[in-house]
Amino acid sequence: MGCIKPQDFTSTCDTTTANQYGFPVGYDQVTVLTAPGYGGVKGSGQNYTQLNYDVVASSLAPSIFITNAQTQTTIMQLLQA
Image (tube, rainbow, N blue to C red; front, top):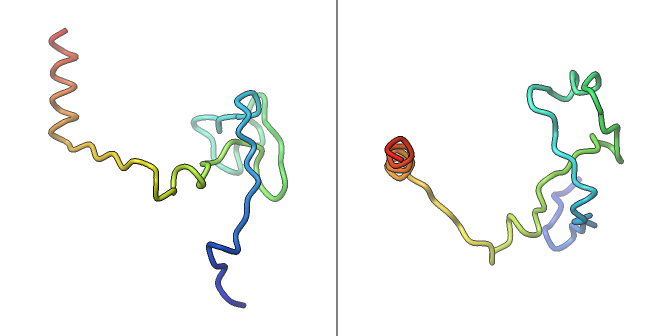
């Protein structure tokens, strides 16, 4: 069994906003089965939105790096407001 080459991988992404469901906070793959409003399964996984790798991992996507210093500066600015 060989590795899957990126050019051989295809995906059909549903990018319709109304069809996107966030995974409930505080649950894992087992306890989510008892979560209120559980989304059920889709294919071989949970019926919750996953990253769109065609966008996130695209070589055209911008890279954003936020340093700890930037974060601390933003926090201080918010506390002074």
